[in-house]
Every structure is written in C-alpha cells, then in structure tokens.
Image (cartoon, rainbow, N blue to C red):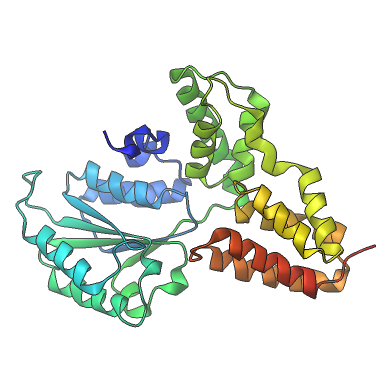
Length: 316
C-alpha cells in the first residue's frame, strides 16, 4: 500500500464532477464536457487546494479515458517529459476506449518558460491525434501565451459570494468523514478550521486528519489563529528584533505562510501607520507569489518579515 492511500485527501477524492466542491458555474462547465464527451486541451488555473487536479481526474474517470499524471515540479526536464508522453501515447489503451488519452501536467507553472513550456507547445501538436492535455497551475501569468492559446482556460475563482455555501458543503462532507472514521469533534473547532483555510479544501482535510490521530479532533488545529501569537510577532517586528522574530518562525513550523500573511494584512489598520499599509500589501503579495516556488518555506517567511520589519512604520 502506498503512503498516499493513508491520506484522507486521496481516500475521499471525488470521482465525479458532481462530487467536487465547486462554484455552480464551474460545475456546469465541466458537466457539459461530460455530457458531450468532448475533451479539449485545458488550462485549469487557481490557488492550491481548490480541486484542479481532482477535476482533471474526475473528467477522465467519467469519460472512461486513460490518463497519465505528471507532477511538473518533480519531472520538469524536456527529454523526460517527451519520453513519458511518447511512451504513454503509444501504449495500448487500458480502458479499451478509442477516445483520446489525457496527459495531466500538474503545477505546470513550475516548468521553465524559456525552454520547457515552448517544447510543450510542440508536444501538443505532435500528439494531437490521440492525446489531450490538461495543465494545472497556481499562477496563470507563469504560463506562456502560446501555450495558453492552445487551451481552453478555466479560472478556479472562489468569490466571497460563493465561499459560505461551499464551506457549508465541505462541512457536511467532513462531518460524514469524521463519523466514518469514528473521530469525535467539536462543531466550533471544525467550523473555525474550515473558515481558517477555506477555500483550500485539501489543506482543511489534511489538517483535520493530522489533528485527529487520537480519535478526537484537537483544538491544537486552531493554534495558528491565536491572536496572541500574531501580536507577539508584531511586537518583534515593531521592535526590529530580528532574533526573536526568527525564533518565532522557527517555533511555529506548522504555520502556513498564507495564514501569517493574511493575519498581518487583516490587522494592518490596527498595527501600522496609514501610509505604510500600501507598502505592506505589495510586500505580502510579492512573497505570497514567491512562496509557491520557494524551496525553503521558512526562509521565505523570514525574508518577508525582515523586509516588513525594516520598511514599515508601526503605531506606538
């Protein structure tokens, strides 16, 4: 049994589009593909955990199409990609279907825009007779235009208008999973955990599993929401105490950078002089973008906080 089979996000990954937690307009779009049976080259764009890879797999499942999933952050060499795709394209269909096979290139924005991505454009044309390509990415602007122009682009945007309804759907699903796993839970903790990480549904499920190892969902899952913790960090930034700030980051290795950045953004009016708020927004946006590609997540957070510490004016 592979390690992935122990992960709830894999065990409970939706198999159909209707099972996916998506805004209604996206469900309509993808269900039309299922109804017509016509798979196109697609680029699925949006932040992590929204279900892009799950949708790609669900489409292949519902259309009974053979597919290969390639993680672009791990297999990014041109020759490796070409060989894997060519081998897959020329293999006998396991489903017995005469329809197109599908190459799912996950996290395609990790691929080099000067070399690998232009080569992929040629791959699409070379294997067009029997393969379709689905690319997923967190940042659409990291995908070259010639590649985008050969795909139907679908943006996974979750607006505030949709968030409450999607969170309610996910709460219902999580409650069912926890009952099936015989895990006790406090409704308040579960609801707060969902809203803390929504709409990153994969992150929510991973956190729930992680903090349910003793048969009960622990309140420790909410430690990242502690106002006191963030206030302590702000104190170090205000005092320009690099040593304490760095220690704070090291002592909170489980905190996601997006949570820290969001807390600082939400508290900007409370902590900062008004003229420093726009600069904070630009710094956070820059490092949030870099976080997707940073090999050392802790170093990226420390670098961001160091820039904030040295650049902004804090309220007394």
